[in-house]
Image 1 (cartoon, rainbow, N blue to C red):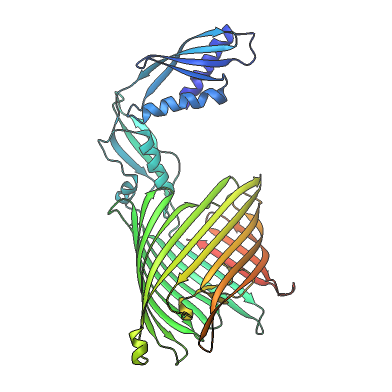
Image 2 (cartoon, helix red, strand yellow):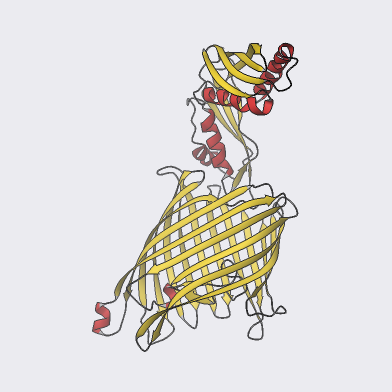
Length: 486
């Protein structure tokens, strides 16, 4: 970039000597000489703001072709009226190849793992865009961060160069915990605890254990493991074992496996397989096993910081399921297999409205299509509470089709700390079975409240007060979430 600045300053002095009377000179043409002979019609105001991107694009074009070191030198200028034609001498160096890749700052992480993400090798031609892409991949790592842009250190003769990456490892152990108070039924606490170890044994592996007491009689346990793989590019394979103990409704045990492939720094696709066994609490209902296969795509991501102007997220998943029931009469057994299709779409968008104020809007659509009606409650979408419809109990509602929406006004008090009033709303549909006749029912609900998020490099605290449309102002639902990294 400094070469561009120098060129503009020198060229500006030349122009000033030729057209002293012009206050707003225009750059008409760039006349290239030397290693490239060409004439480019520009027609732009001759200021650093307008000319710098033009010259920078010329440099990038050479660097993306393997000529990493290029000199652009002003050779003269011709003025006519307020229009300037600038002569530029182009001198390119030799094609540069990579002689070494240096990785600094690692203590626990194996350097070989980082090199798999960089995807550069000794002997490769040095392309600027490939270096930029490697830096983007390192910035997305969950267990390490890139401290600064990669350094390109030329060897004598400028035909080879070493690329050096400076990284710092993120804290390995994360403890997320939350507690909430529900004023109903004489009042009681809900809570969850999530323990995560990332970069386990220095190989980028992730292990997590979640215990979630969502209600008095609703408990979830989930154990997950994931590690990087490079079968078809940068990817990740993972598996999980989970239980749901909804004492008044059902007990569920399940396992799953998934594979995620990175197509670009902003796009990932996922494939998954899962199996679960469900035991209803009602003895009149039959237990069953469920099989699921799904694919999904995720584009973009939301970075909740004061300096972020615009961000978006698109997350879509479709799953195909079948159930096999056990027990019951002969007729029921013959009809025990069903084919379901589940669609889940999540959209999020944030936009800085004015400095210090960002608007966030999110929407989620979930739908299951099945030949069975009504569906078992364990196959429905459950919502309510933090993450779906604040102001209500966790998983208070179950529905076959759900449209959730939320809006937050994020008032930043620092780069990452903010206060946020919010409004959540939902429209949902379910099947009502009245004496063997199934009908479709629907309803709207909404909640509102306010919260505050305070964070540092190793800790984050979130406090929310939420109400639903029927709750009195003296009966808010309080949620406190604390995250700590070690």
